Image (cartoon, rainbow, N blue to C red; front, side, top):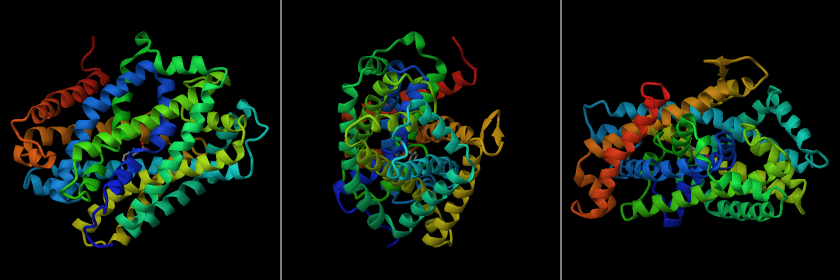
Amino acid sequence: MSKRDKFTSKIGIIAAVAGSAIGLGNIWRFPYITGKYGGASFLIVYLICIMLVGLPVMLSEFIIGRHTGKNTVGAFKELAPGRPWFLSGWLGLFASVITLGFYSVVAGWGVKYIIMSLFNNFSGKDISNLGIAFDDFVTSGLDPVFWQLLFILFTGAIVVLGVKNGIEKFSKILMPIFFILLCILVVNAFTLEGAKEGLAFLFKPDFNQLTMEAIFVALGHSFFTLSLGMGTMITYGSYISKEEDLTKTALQVIVADTGVAILAGVAIFPAVFTFGIDPGEGAGLAFVTLPAIFTNIPFGYILSILFFFLLTIAALTSAISMLEVPVAFLEEETKLSRNQGTLLICLAAGIFGLLCSLSNGAVNITVMGQSLMSFAEYLSSNILLPFVGLLTAIFVGWALQKRVIASELKLKQESTAYNVFMGILKFITPIAIIFVFLYSIGVISF
Ligand code: PHE
């Protein structure tokens, strides 16, 4: 591909940015953490984080990326020459490799579940057998490693093909199909015995349940699910043409991403209560519940194949966007070619992911008392992404020239919209993140 490809159409931008945002974060992670951290009250905090933190940070990343047309490190270097802001870009690069590593493990589970669906492996199994099958698989060592590496290989192949050919084409056609399939599962959920209980769990808040840890996780997830704090939206922003309306793009993507997460919740929680699973079951929640749903509905065989296939594609478009961050950096800032850069990062993330996968049970690899896999997820989502997001918000809010921001947002500096945006970005966003951080490490308490 040419060095500085641009997205060719409006729908292409939305598809690629939404393709990045919508992924395992929505279908796998959102339901499992919502289940773990109390349901509706968690959901509400998450939605607040999306609006007050996610949206401003997404716009900030877009502004940095589109204005400079550069990769995440190069962009900071251009906007703040001689100052250390580029280190934020470096942290994002680090986050991208870590995240791609553990993300590919879960995506590999998705690939395995396509195969299991094809061979009709779920049929006749009840919920406890499905749970055992999942545990046996993820702890079995080489089997999940194989699928994880296969997934990384796929991701690398598509990134080598370049922005236009790879990313746009894939996202545009398949994501709408995925959406329809999710709607079918939602309709089905309403017919289940546990529908009422499941929906109440998801939508009727009990704030007594809300812990500070839940708020910390909700904040982290708002970064993870919107692909923020890594430089993804800086990098993708650099491919967006000057005519596009960044605010509109961001809003559309956020609505789509949040919508898909909630749909996934509505599809899953009624089933959770119908089959008597613990909503706080953990990382296996979707992988146990969804097969149980498919074995109980008409055309379940076909639907399960389709679902896990499309889930894997959704994961692929997200993984592509993670890989694109360091690859664009290596291509533009070092002597490596695009292909060499891709190979290098795929190797690093592949090996790290392999260790994460093994740490699920086959080999004892722990960091700070948890498996490497959980640690990687924790480090990425709860620490690195919010921290880089914080730096990004401070950078755009306090260091970047007003002229640049106003022109990228196509707003006048005197306008209310501009001032509201800057007010949130300068004060509310950073203070919220800092507050949650300080509380979580125990510096402040009530
Ligand atoms: N947003 C993606 C998801 O929800 C994950 C992701 C995180 C992608 C960070 C890119 C960067 O699955």
